[in-house]
Image (cartoon, rainbow, N blue to C red):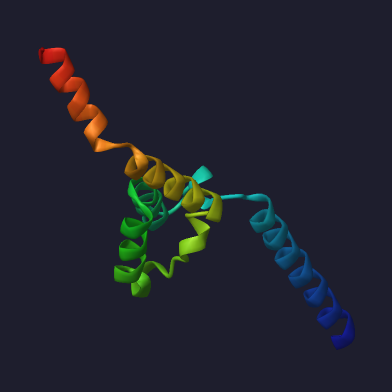
Length: 104
């Protein structure tokens, strides 16, 4: 009798864990459907900047136990780095030259 009960509990536990594992694997980002207040705040910080998200997660680690990579993908970081590089490559002298030329 105990073997049957133990087997049923093991099967039920495996089913529940399997369901959660597949759900987590399907979601690409927790920001698609943030459920908890901490997740909503983390998503807002992720939209601001990676540094802001990192600071938020470090400050609230004991409260929410969030993980940086659940809210920020490497593709997001690469996109932001490319934007910063494009902004830094824009010659500042060109804008000044356009202003000077338009005032003449």
